[in-house]
Length: 473
Image (cartoon, rainbow, N blue to C red; front, side, top):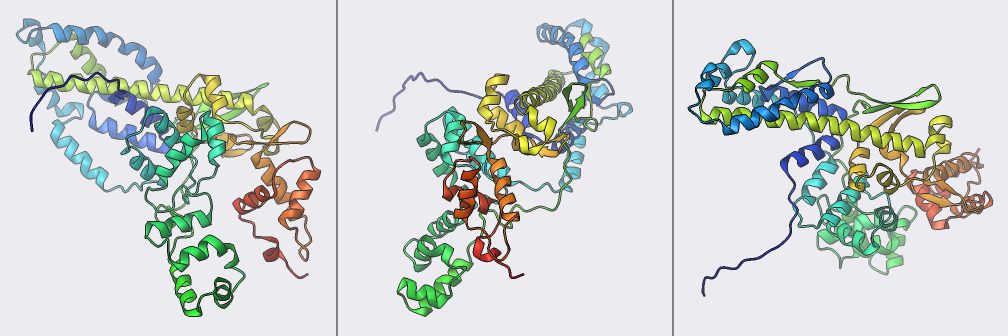
């Protein structure tokens, strides 16, 4: 063994803390944002709530730049710093602040009483952050997580994601294969069969009879008895019964029971109103505290201080945090409004006439219009809602892939699902339509899609097959 020194030159991307804060702010729904800002108000003595718009406030904060530079250049023994003692000021209860350690301990105790449940998305994002991924893979991973529903299933196909992100399908599959190893078992699966097989693989039960039944005869379980399955598989009844008991221990959906939460009040982040001949986007932040730098501290920072170097360093850090927080809030508001305005331009008919006029739209289109990254559009869309003239919708609702028509046009995936619902609603209860018959009716209306796609959309609508919809009148 020997010791040696080597010099290596490599490029790496490091996210600044301020950028991380901006991304977190953008990802927060309005209620979480309000909670975060009130916590910052309680822990940062330089921040205070104001009726004044923080946009106007930021214009005033530019004067701090000069003050901060002056503070760096001033020697500790500068006689001009004898005007104010920061230590005494920070301990002055008249301003509603106490010593930092005491106050933050009190705040931590208060926050510990509030239980904030982690969502499935947060749980998966935390695991994604532990992987060593390239920037492109990280973007793909975040986009995949944004398309996993609360039950843990992937709601779009890898090909659709590859088309929307303009990347090779292989790149999607590589990242998706990593996500499918995450907890909970089976997450990222596209259907029940795939989820159950993954759960069995994670238990090292790939060579069992239960795995073979799920792989080959899952969709026959609901219409065949255990005895029929045992004859079909050519195995004894007792072994089939044990295999069925094992299958019953599997979760019907990957995240079932783990991330379920009670009914939550939806507070839209944005409101779209019809004013005159145009639609106006309003940011719904009336309950979000307006932040500004405490004017008393502003004047003291400008005049200087005779306090210790550590005290001045603490004040400088809190000042920088306050400025970046206000910047992040403004950037979040501006980004969300720009994205929503672009969506309105692309989905004009929806806002004018209703849901049946929703047209195909992908995030890449909006990203190109607003000149932002697709991952940013995904953060804006995920878990945030907008009040429209046609009800409250999740922003992600406006993004959907297109289905080709025989006339060369396209209609949205949601519109096709609605057509399927209408066809099934009009059927004879004694002779319900099979998926093949639904497929033929869609073809007659000029909607081009495969029969298996009809089955997939019907299952996504949670509509049972024809044999289970049959009713005697």
